[in-house]
Length: 360
Image (cartoon, rainbow, N blue to C red; front, top):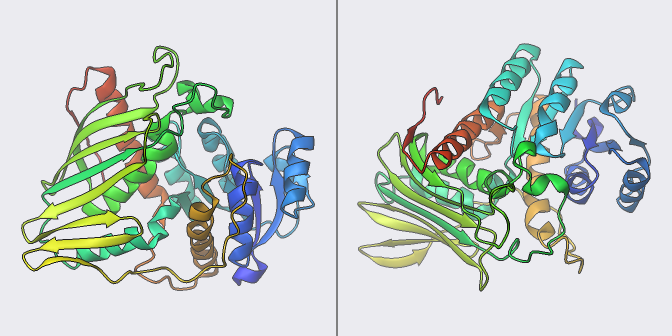
């Protein structure tokens, strides 16, 4: 099977149409159809991206000939049932983050995918951004020695306005909402990819905006963590901090310090400071960024998601994968959800230290 003949169904008419449909096409996949709950709304969104077939259930879409794989881009609480349905039908599957509502669901899906023998990935596409690949390569090459201290701080004002219009699940903890799953899950995956497994966390899930933290999911995450390697770290991410954007990704070891500065990686050591040559994924098509303020991240999301879609197709086809391009598997998804569960457990108990068990 080649990437050009691989047929995929995208479940989710929002992020699915905006990001996954163009990314899949960029990668040479055939988008067979789009699934959404509201037929009229789904049809309008699908038409804007040139997809003719729309469905209101995955069951309907799976009956279409040439449907080899399923991309699930729906609210987190729906992921488990949809993934189970796709795997049960023998389809390969890529599931958006956060993978599931909790680690128990994630472990069940991992077992089902392994038993079925399908390709099963989690949508942590930012593994394929050049800065994160370059940082990983530098750590792996030992340029700073064994990492001992790590800092990951990110402040933005995305959710600071109280009139922010978002889907209903976004602030609903019962549906997997909150900044921890919506964004910080990407950082957790990156930390694991760079530094290995988490050993323990102590965390709080504050509400920085003037919303009711008693009923709504968090807009911020503040945690201290320790890796099994002994590396100590701080993770503070918020979507509700007014002011200029702040991003600090720093990993320090006895031989030097690595920082992500904009789109580049800087090494500081006894010889001074210098930018590292980037390690980049294969070039993708240029992304035309529109002026729609509701879609400010397309220029970041689509190129990385394109690389992810190409790797997904290559894995299905049995094509060898470049070892520098490691997609997030369901096993990675389980490990990420274990960390998320530990953060939630810690925050619910006053920030007590929670030790993780059963990490791969």
